[in-house]
Amino acid sequence: MEDELSMIEKNGTWELVNIPSDKQVIGVKWVFKTKLNLDGLVQNNKARLVAKGYVQKPGIDYNETFAPVARLDTIKTLIALAAQKDWKLYQLEVKSAFLNRKLQEKVYVEQPEGFMVQGKEDRVYRQHKALYGLKQAPRAWYGEIDSYFAECGFEKSLSEATLYTETRGENNVLILSIYVYDIVYTGSNQGMLNEFKKDMKEKQIQASLFTKGTTEKLIKDDGSGAADEENYRKLVGSLLYLIATRPYVIYATSLLARYMHGPSNKHYGTAKRVLRYVKGTLDYGLMYEKGKKAVLVGYCDSDWGSSIEDNKSTSGYAFSFGSGVFSWASVKQNCVALSTLEAEYVSASKATTQAIWLRFVLEDFGELQADATPLKCDNTSAISITKNPVFHQRTKHIDRRYHFINDALQQGVIDLVYCPTKDQVADIFTKALPKERFNYLRDKLGVLSAQSLKGSVSV
Image (cartoon, rainbow, N blue to C red; front, side, top):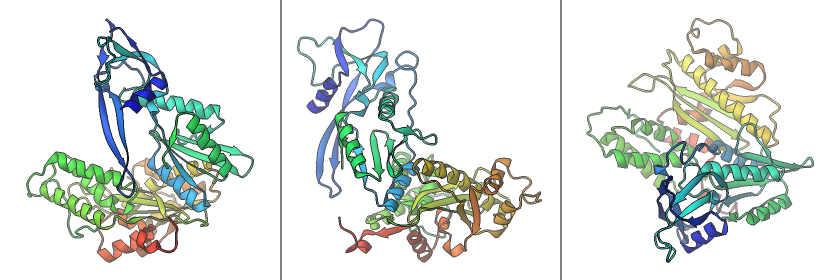
């Protein structure tokens, strides 16, 4: 707590003043957290002073609050690129990130509990800079770091507002991405990486180094009785966080997430089975290999009419960059598909939008994809219609937004190619699978057990 207040004072975050007559005073509270190492031992105890920003009124206590946050796909793309190029990857945790930017509004907070200034207990702090919990704090932090990177000569991506690159000469590049108050960075030149780390320290930034029951179908009202909604939401929320690094549980998780309101005991039991599977595969993770060809490759698939309640289909896609996948999704389609062809066509269109965005990001990384991105599909009819955009009786009713895939193909952005169903890795994102099939596709995703790497890598 003393360290937190010391940092606040050092940054000139506030000053003690008399209570204003025309402004409300916002309360503050202490939030405590124990940070653990990977081995479960205590790394440090953290205390954070947080403003009760929920009492702030728009237009009075704050104006703009929006601040961009990096997509996890961007972070995973960066990881995949670093592995492919054999670059070192670092993470910086910003210490007191929200205490750096000056506030435009007049904001007053109470003195923190346990640290009242003797003889001045009736006074309050006026915030000169942002404090955790304030509505405008994330925007203030982003404005500060964005200005700093601009001054340092970094170029901001047009495709991702939290992605920055610095290039020196032809072969020296440094790439970084901001995720809330963490910075992930990599590059081809170790000297540039060391220089960046040193500069960040001077800026007060501190380094810190399913199986499913395959025959089951979930429905809203299954007659099993109501489950505890709060605990169910916590459980599924944790699984949603977990799929950022465990693609093989995304289908089950996205299915469970459809029943956040009014879950049944069957839903809750299914969610616990997913947890048991996760517990049994704690040492599994995605493997990215160096030296692989730096080519973006995509897979797309669908499960026609998989939802019993509304007959909508499920789309899934995955993208790799030389080795393990780094971008994936499993979502229910917005419209009812009248055939397998239509479901596959819509799925391919969704995957195309992701492919285009990933190509933009890779270009910002300096990895221009000169050739069309292969998008592997196991439905020959969908491929044929895409490559021959003439009037078809079976596709005339499809929402026109999905037909842009034809333009993307003709422009050489993507190339929809046939993939045998047995090798269609996106199949794992669209339906429940038998154990052998599930494990086979999980391996194809690049997911391996750490035990299988013993002797081949050093820790």
